Length: 561
Picture 1 (cartoon, rainbow, N blue to C red):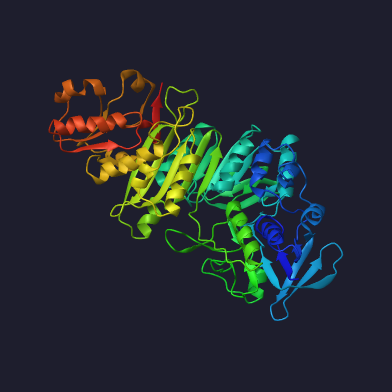
Picture 2: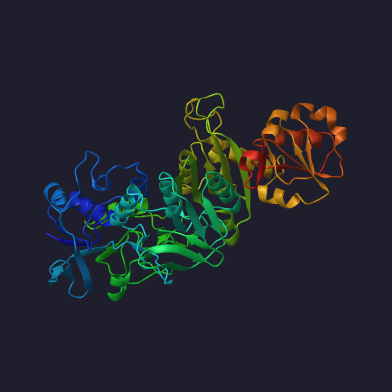
C-alpha cells in the first residue's frame, strides 16, 4: 500500500487525491491544508459578493448540496483531509513532510511514497504605505468575500476603489455595481485587460464600462493608502480618491517557498518547473495548480497563468500518474472569458502584440455582427478579432467582445488552435445551426472569410486604430454608407472629413467623391462598407479602405441623438 501525501486542499490538490483514490483503492491518502476551508470554488466569490450566489457555503458544496468537508472526503472517498495544518518542510531523502497543527502548535512527520505539491498562489500585495489598513481586501479567500458582502449589506461602504483592471478587478467591478455605490478602477497600464486583449478590443470594453457609470483610470499608479484604522482614500500619482472599500486585484505570485527550500527546480517564471506528466525535478514529487508554470501551446514558452480550469486538469493528471499512469498535460492557450454587466469578453491564443513579439508574419481581421439572426428576439452584437499566420493560414488567436454569445466562439477557436488548424478549418467546421443560436454562417466563420479575403486582396481592411490616425488627414475621406436614420442616431465624433452617402445611392453619386483621395468606407458593421469598396474600385477608385467592425466596434467617442 503506497502512502500519498498532498499539500494543498483546494482545486488541484483534492482533484489529485480523488483521482488517485479511483485509480488505487488501497492507497493511504492524506491531504494537508493550512486554511480552515477546503475544496471551495474561489472563482465564484465575485458572484457571491454580487448576490448571485446566496450562501458562501454554496461554493463548497457538491452539485447535490453536500458540503465538501473533511468528513465528506473521509466517508465518501476514504481520504484523510487535515485542515489548519501547515506543511513546514520536505525531506526528500527520508521522504517525509513535517507538518504543524496550527490550532495546537504540535508538529509531526508524515512519510510519503509519492508527494503532491498544490500550494497555489497568493494575491500580490504591494509594499505601499497604508496597505494594511482595514477594508483593503485581496479577495483570495472566502473570508474576504464574506466580509465584503457583509459590509455591503450593512451599507458600510460608500466608495469603492479597485486596483487592477484584469479578470478579478473587472469581475469585482460588476459585482459591486449591484450595490449601487460609486466604483473607481485604477490600472497602471494604459488599457483594461492588459494581459490578454489588444488595444482596440480593450477600447470597446473601456467605452462600455464608462457608459455604465464606472470610473476607469488607466496609466495611473497607486502610491499610498490613507486613513486612521480603516482606509479612507487611495492616492495615485494623479488623484486622491475617496475609498472606504479597496480591492487589490493586481495579479498573483506562485507559492513556491516550500518547494524551493526542498531544492526542487523552479522555472523561468518563478513557478515550480514540471514535465509533461507534472512531475517535478524529484521523480517522487508532483506539482500542479497555481504554483507551477505551464507551456504555451503556440509560443512554446513557459508561462505563469493561474486558472481554476487548469488546476483541475492538473489534479486529474497527477492523480492518474501517482498510480503508475503516464497521462500528459500538453499546455495552455491562455483562454479566458469574463462577464461585465451584459458585456461578454473572451480570448484564446496569441494577441496581435504577442504574435508580433514572436516574429510571426501575421494578418488580422475584425468583424462585427449579431450573435444570431437579426430577426430573432434577443439577438445581440459581438465583435470578433481573428489573428492568423499570413503564410500558412494557421490560426494564432481570437478575441471576442459584445453583449451577444462570446464563449462559444472562443471555445471553437480554442479547439482549432489546439489541433493546429487554419482559417479554412474555421470555415469548414460543420457547426450547429438554428436561428435561436446563431446565423447560417457563424461569426467565427465570417472572421475566417474576412482573413481569406484580405489574403486574396479582395478586402483592404484597416483597424479602428488606423482609422483614428487617418481622421486628421485632409486627403482621407470617411465614407459612411448607412441610412440617414442610422446616421442621425449615432455618428463618429470629431470626424471632419466625413461624407454620408447611403449604399443604395452610391453608384449614382460617385461624382461627389474624388478619386485622388483615400476613402475609408464603413457602416454599422462594415459589411456595406465592404460592398462600397467593391463599387468604388470597379469605378476606378484605387485607394479605398474598409474600417473593420464599423460603428459597432468603434472604441472611441461617438455622437448620439
